[in-house]
Length: 117
Length: 502
Image (cartoon, rainbow over all chains, first blue to last red; front, side, top):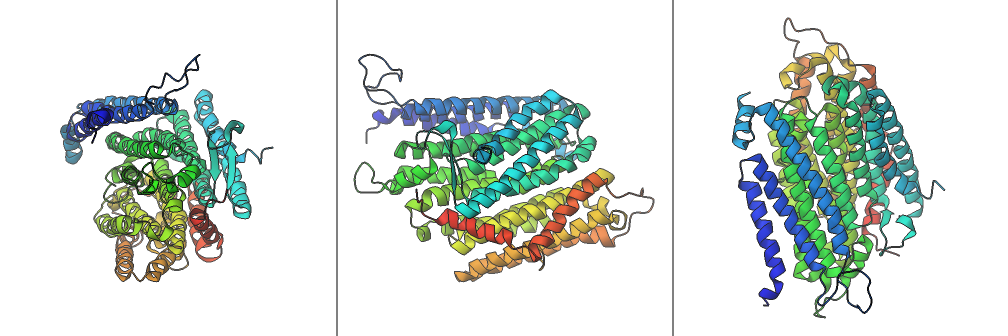
């Protein structure tokens, strides 16, 4: 197995699992959002790396270039990045409201207040 | 001219009306704009449904660019059925929302509320017509992001934590979906769902195994399954759902319970039938082993948990998880009859859960509480609302003459057709547990007396009661007189199984 030749997948897997682990284990809500971001970004990295064609140039038409990288994953991910930014913004603004209402952004303390009320 | 563009208009109109609502600013104007848009979409959906049933799948190339290069909208009978459900529920919910949210949401947020509702509506419709796996992701996120905002508008502060958890789980689910689509794209080089179906049957690079048998496609399918299951709230990935339905504003609970999970189920159907069903022989889809056990376990366990809920909206939320189990069970049987029963239950469940959540919204409007003990004795004081709850509850259990009976009967027939007695028995057990939890609500409401010294409550305002009653009576209508829904479900099942003929 060509271990190093597939390094882009290893990068993607490590990033994805770190993000997912942070998402699941962090008790702080902001850290959860950071984990979510890492998780999403890893998938973006995966998409973009699959668009690379060996020896291909940047996908802009130019004299004397025949091989281009596949531009479609880039455009897809451009859209997905917008979605990611929107969900991050929404997540952070929800955290602000939670902070106002509960006075804390630690998941344990917030849950505890719900149980007690 | 308009008929030709009806597919895209149904999606684009609400998308354009959403910012218009914000610009109009005042609650009343935004409400009028939103209602007109939603009713127009409903009209278009009915028109499209008839056309699809008469002529088969419709195609629309956006900007005149033909698929697979261009982005294509594609409406088959299954999509048209779900589209009709979504638009019908929205058309009933909007008149109701005007009175309901005046009590639950601050005045200055009303325009934003309608804008978010329209965005969510537009996203859900987009999924029903999208003929492209990546477009489904984008529409899924449009509807989900606006849903998180809608949920967070609930009065209780727990709505915020519910919305946040939903955001985390929903985004993970959507990202899994995106990853699955990425794997599929990597193997086939296309995103158009019909083209994907064709490309999956081709030989892969090694010249021995077909593409659909490669590990990459297998991995793609597992990511897609888990990702969509999170959105469907299939047991055991349902943890976000109870709090979301319990603490969202009444209108939002009714709208979401009747539409959002149904559309997610449609994505399931797209992945397993429209895309995969073509490549893998229909009977050998590994759905029966993977989905049915979770679906049936969910139906029984969630029903059981529902019995112990003291909050009516949470109770109904758990019941929704159980009902999703029935639908997925029907779909997972991988037979025409099973698929048909799943789709029919999808339609009927939208009617019954819509009725119940709207009726509970009426109670909340007068009583201000959703805990079961606050419903004591309101049967005499809110007769119309109570009638709706009785009808909706009966339909939920599956009492004959209601819509719920028709689809549950169809599901049982489909299960027994394959000789799966254990599953049939578990479905009946789950229905019997439904008798207990619906019975609890009815007992408290109709038989118990109002506590001494409690304030007298009146019937909810007519703007709320009439939509609730319309939806309640439709449960009876589709349970007795009208077989149209069953015909549409049959056509939808056929459209999913049929070979791509283009």
